[in-house]
Image (cartoon, rainbow, N blue to C red; front, side, top):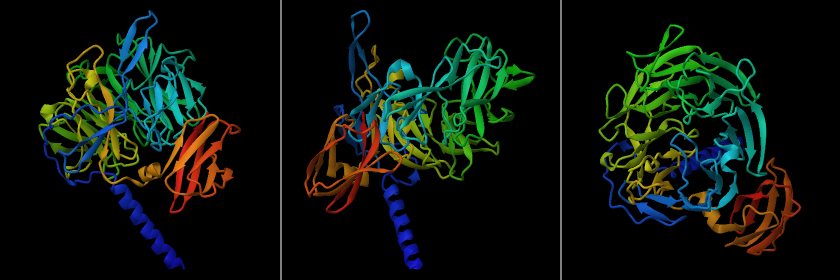
Length: 510
């Protein structure tokens, strides 16, 4: 019996591995420059086109729409809301939801709005890496907030102050390019304290500051957005390191920022718990992100390393660098994302210009040069807003990017939309489930209607903690209306048993 059980376990693991692998365009070949093909017509919201120019066809789906509104002066305005940046995660932890900046949350299957979280109340906010229901918000006034999608509830859980207990002038995550570690333990923030900059290590589990290091005169005349001498500060994915990328426009090897006799420039690594200096990775920082190499070491992946026209990785422990790809397509006009925290060993790269082939790809973080092609972005890239800035999903099976689909030129505001690129393959298990059973509306506050292509045998409704709240007998019907008026607001899992399979879906009760 035990041997039989082990055999079934091995079969399950192999099946799961094949299922996961089937989500990726596994080209497993050295990089090749594939010119951008003729730009297809701009798809409508929720519709897609196929990029057949890459080895495995990629489906590109539009997920944002133009927003027309009336401003406070009564004047009509136009906005093109998109995702934020290549290093800011679009999807929640289980990839069932995505957010449009710090404004609205959408269902990742239907692309329909789930919640308006408010532009000012939570900006800037970041998905938890472990709780799909949670958004973290880091306000400039020092407030740390938690926002729960299922209940639309926000709470202030902490406030960052300086060593004297007073408020900072500004508190920033990054600024703009920082992230939480992959386990939601630590975050590195920067605080403006007069002309000084404090790097603040904050414990998100204990909700308290564990260390702060002052860099005297570092903020200087940087204003509200950026310290004068610093580009960004971020915690590494493990939470073991803090990385500072010094601003190469204000610091250099020959003109460093000097603090307590120590020269600062390029990209430096510090230990998280005491901010002790560890090493300098490179003398010149550029577009890059923090991730894991294929061998398990934490790395900085960036353009413009020892030579131009290449992609490089530098080990945070100071043990050296690797040239991943040397090719003119890998210039400095592009972006890198390592937000694929559930798929370590890869970085996701955007070539911003058509002259650099305009491709989006996953690159294996070793010395083999192995890539996976996620198609072309078809953007004119005539403005910063139209720069594609692809960001990877937590599982690395899809990316989100910005494009105007060649509409250009730069206008005010620039025409631009967000798109999702994924392998154009037979439907995944999750997508098949979605096509078998549909539920409307979601979210809901009174009733939810269920439509199935197969007879429904049984329905169990679970709370977020896994407790069975209600069981229903649909009497082999293919349609049923479920009364949820007595349910407490929150996120619920509906498990459906049909003639041939078991299907689960998540529903938000308002």
